[in-house]
Length: 171
Image (tube, rainbow, N blue to C red):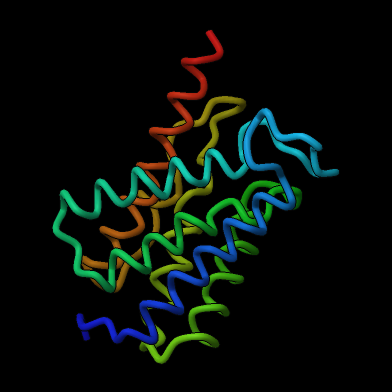
C-alpha cells in the first residue's frame, strides 16, 4: 500500500506537529528560548528537530520517496528526540513507542508503517566507543523491507548531519 489517503496524511502531519510542539514545550524552541523550560536542552530542542525534519524532506525528495514514506519519515524526524531524560537507548525507545502508538491510534495505515516510524526513531540511538560516537543503531538494525531501511537510514543521516554541524559551530 503505497497510496496515502487524505485522512492518514492529515493524521501524520498532525502527529508531526504534536511531536514538535512537545519538544518545544519540554526542551525549548531553540538555544535562545526565553523563558527556558525546566528541561531546556541547548541542542536537542525544537530548532534541532526542525532542522532534522527539513533535511529529511530534502533527502526524501531526492530519493523519490512516496508521499506515504515521506510522511512516516517526517513524523519519525519530528518524534526522534521526544524523550531526552531517560538515558541513551531508553530515550529512543520511549520516543519510538510514542510515535508507533500515535500512528496506530490516529491512522488506518497497516501496522508495518507504525513499526517503520518506530524503527526510524530507534535508529537514532548513538553507538558509543567510550565517549566517542562511532555510529548509530540504524546501521545495525534488522529491517523487513528496503523501504523500512531507507526511511530509518535517512532519518538517521539527518540527525548525524545536524550533530556534526552543531559540533563544528562550537569550534
